[in-house]
Length: 400
View 1: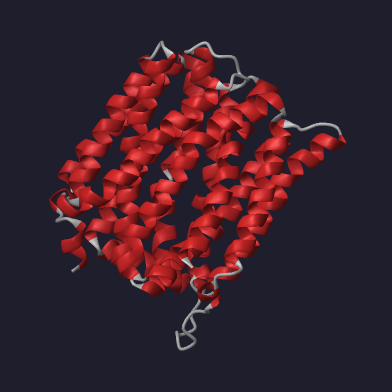
View 2: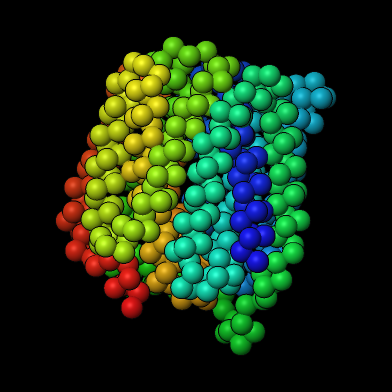
């Protein structure tokens, strides 16, 4: 069952990795606007902020498989609309922004259901291992996918990339449909309550567990900085490194970041066994701050790749540390609510960081905007060192 789930995710992630380059690239080619590039990244994060709370509560009531299949179908339709529009006569910036929002809305539902799917497939004791395997697959695809996305975009055009992504969603859904355990519905004896009561229960749990609460709040600072870097990546590649907007080398920069994410996925398991959750987050935020400074000041392609890899190690370690800790400590009946709520809060800074960075880049330049993002990461690390989570024990001790 886990193999089918991993294959499904891997195929979809491959399509997503191609689109991660093609969609912002098409928008920048159409408009040449740094502000719109930042807006695209911001809009991709907004649905989680708006829908995270109610979706988390709803998904805890539904069959995980049904939610996963319906959200996959919606994402496929949104992605397929781009090549369809291209055949009819052209793609507009507004259309690309709408596609970004639509796929992000579908992702909120899929993500909420996946939090319950993993424990259902592997049990609570297998969560950390399964998450690490998923992250390894995701980042291996992330290494090869973006350069390939840049190459396919340069040769065949962005609409072809979105068609591939749509087909990937369809194949992924077929594999998910074969996992019988995901069709199990929630406990029928569970008390029937309103959505608001379910949301409140999830929020109370987060607040009642200090390590989950602190890691969730610290994620805001991490996501502000991450949103800035992600939103300006293509802009910095063009304006600072001097690459052309259709250069396949832009995909290599995305891949360099994926190398860092892969390293983080390998490191997080051993770190969580030996190091406290707070210490991991403090160290990772400091690394991210230094790496963002390096990316802001990079004048060579190789230096930029190295900086992005180190930044991704830091920012991914912060995220994984929070996700694995939450999934390990949260009861099964609260998985959807707690994880979507926590991720909604933790990702809350991403649209702010991306949007602000895009405006700052237009006003004061790309490098100063990125240095401000580095300062946010540094300040977040200093705050983390003062919170109770800074003294938390390794995850194994917390879960005992």
